[in-house]
Image 1 (cartoon, helix red, strand yellow):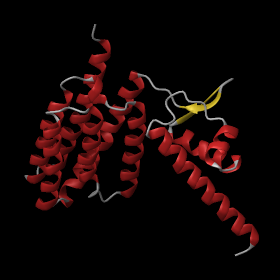
Image 2 (cartoon, one colour):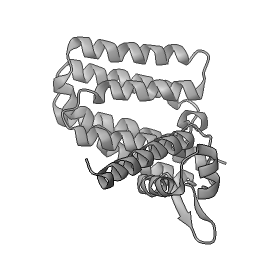
Image 3 (cartoon, helix red, strand yellow):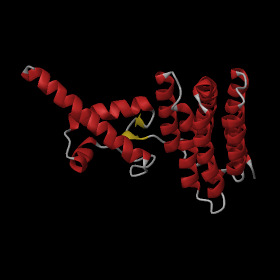
Image 4 (cartoon, rainbow, N blue to C red):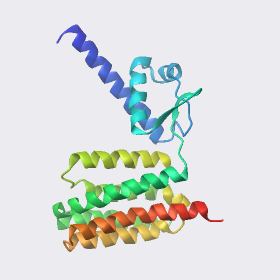
Length: 224
């Protein structure tokens, strides 16, 4: 390997590390919505030079987690309820299709594993913690998606879930009653998968499940 190739690899590695570091800080709330991402400050905080940090910010902008605002510069993206609803509508279509094509690959053992996650969600309703419930909700859905034969589709789902996790720490915080209905809808999905229901029916039910969350969020925002 030439010196130039080594330098390029090193630069790529630092950019990747910077990307993962900044992404994790955005998703865990360390850098909240509107937080200014000043290169010199980030370099001081992370110990990484500005060149890989700049590349990391470009990637995060493509992911929708960072935005560049005139006269302000780069900052963590700021979202409103309408944007969350629109993203949920898009995710509904992706999830509907993904669940339908996962279903034939799920055995009774796989379905039982997903049921156990949903049972934990039911238990979590008793002493409700929206953040913990949201994490279990993600675990449930990805217990289905891990059987998806389309790796690109899974990567799209992961990106949209990450973006939504940033946009709303927990929809269940803002939508009273949605959590209990959600676990019932999960069980309905598992019943369809176990019964080898037609793919269009599974897709429709899975899509409606996510749209119901979007609708509930919209109603909560317009309620007096």
